[in-house]
Length: 217
Image 1 (cartoon, rainbow, N blue to C red):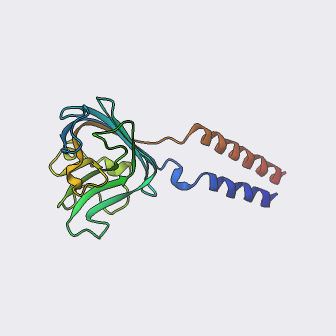
Image 2 (image 1 turned 90 degrees about the vertical axis):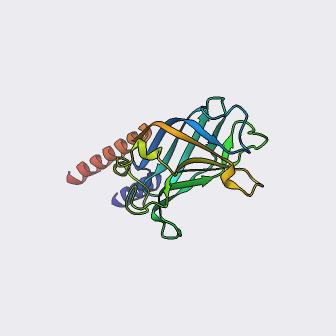
Image 3 (image 1 turned 120 degrees about the vertical axis):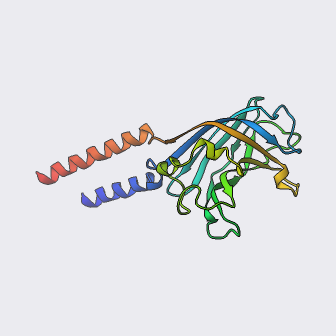
């Protein structure tokens, strides 16, 4: 019986990796567009357009599982597959030539419509300040809930902060193909463990309790 129980525990560990147990953080934000690169300008997204977005990442692994932005004209772009968050702390993982603090995420996106003839451009977003020391958190680990408490709204909207870029394939100048915006409000919350997981854990704990009682008997 102990061998069977061990197999159950190993299987449950495989189904519920530690990185997925209350380790995800979701950031929701709202703001307005302040600048659009000349290639992407138009299609109804203009300076002053309202926008909202969110992203979810795993604190343990730094993997961004979801990201989406929606603009007031109806244009939206979402992350098409999970990507890694690149965290900076004075040096970009120790590799950058200039100091900086924050994080950057780059990956392929899926848009709901063409934007000036470009469909599904690569997307980059970030919360970072170039050429700055000690502005956010210590180390290059993904920020947890505690680390986010040190980030103020005024800091997010300060000089040199970037949030969302679109990289149009075939064009050399990445800096021209971007959207910048202010963040009027944002919230940071832990992603709750799904109800199905709690039910699974409850059932597992019940099975463990029954096994313990049989052993005592």
